[in-house]
Image (cartoon, rainbow, N blue to C red; front, side, top):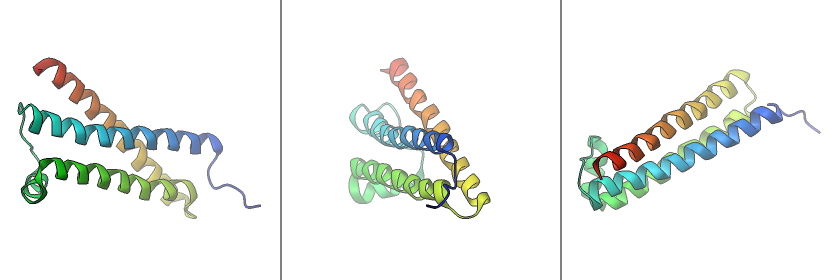
Length: 118
């Protein structure tokens, strides 16, 4: 049997961070849709998403944004767990850690914004 490339502790931590980042990605897309489309108290600041929303509607753009974000995380996870090069594993792991930190912070911001501005 092949020796695992990462420790079970690191793998568990990567899976937890992946879960946080995936949930926060979906939550961010849903919160953006709610704050911009349902209760219009903000505007989309990303010009690419604004252009996409003209094509498929804002709800469709947020759905695609959530799917795209989770898909990118799904690309990083196997690299962080099983890539043969240690540097590749470290960089992909850092990407997952960074995504989970930034997206969790963004989710907190959305909750704070919603509580403050209704």
